Length: 255
Length: 234
Image 1 (spheres, each protein chain N blue to C red):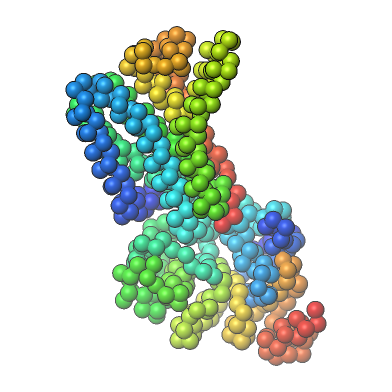
Image 2 (spheres, chains in turn red, yellow):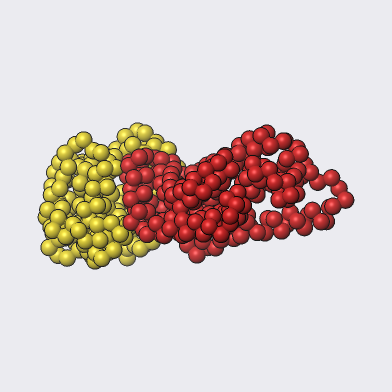
């Protein structure tokens, strides 16, 4: 397994995109911290950026990478390797490279300007976004043979989780505003890793005015620590389930 | 050594393999012949576990190959169209394969030398011609000294010199008593190479005969003529 992770990471290093991604993150993070005098506010602005930008890069880059390494995968499937090992190695290589890029690009500025638990929380939720969306990308690309279709599905999924989902939830909120919606809201939030990360962050920041509806409900329902633990657990589930499904799919895929 | 039992594979409506049963034993050199799209490559890919059959099963040394992967250590496979990571050099691809197989038996680098691949080992795979790619594929198939060789159109795209080198290499390995599976459309070059013929058509296995049997049945000496006669009869 380690051998293949090594080759995937070597390949990604040769590919300059991950490096460019790191530099862009560095520029954005330093920019945000320099614009705001208050570093906590900086973390908040950075969070909003991170929750849109990180999923986008992770899902699109991973999807394209999987399609572009179809030769590599084909070559290795005929070798004495377990398919599960092969697929998980590719996943690990991708998730690891993107995580390192994120940790350098966003982690360095955060540690410099806001080396607090809040800053750390931002890094953790960004890491979760990276591995979750890499997993979703793997699932999308193993399901479809056609490259254009696969990338299209990935873009749609990103669009869904970052924008459409919230819009739908808002619509539901207004439509059913006469009913008690606290519990359904919690369930709905759990179904979206981006929202979940946001709630996790906001619970930590404890800015009730900024928490929005879901954040407030979470806060009331679980209290800060319990709510954080629960959302972290659900994020962990999100990190594993798509990958697990993609492994199952890859094991019976014809190459 | 390799036994396929009632293997069926559908791609949508197309039956790529239709109830195929075949037995391959050690020491045999088998030619897999049939028109384009008759399921030869699909059969090879199911043996390698790259394609999972819808029904039926394949055993390698009495072990079902489903969910098994260790057996591939003993197979050298040369694909019809070798596809390799574009931005790796020849040397890197070979080094990676060695790294992955971690084979303890001694490596057989005859073909790498014969094809003079070491002289161009810094070339990127992307820049290689089809024929050079085939040379890399062939070298990799023989590199780990496997018990079974599966060669899908081995000489397609090779120049006469290279194709003669490869043929000689196949002969040498045959002498060592290995099981060799070849598909090819150039029947004349199979004449002195193979001992058995498997003929496929539209996903079905039409017959599996020894070379001598086939010569007797058709009264033709040359494989090309014998197959032509059979195709006419059908």
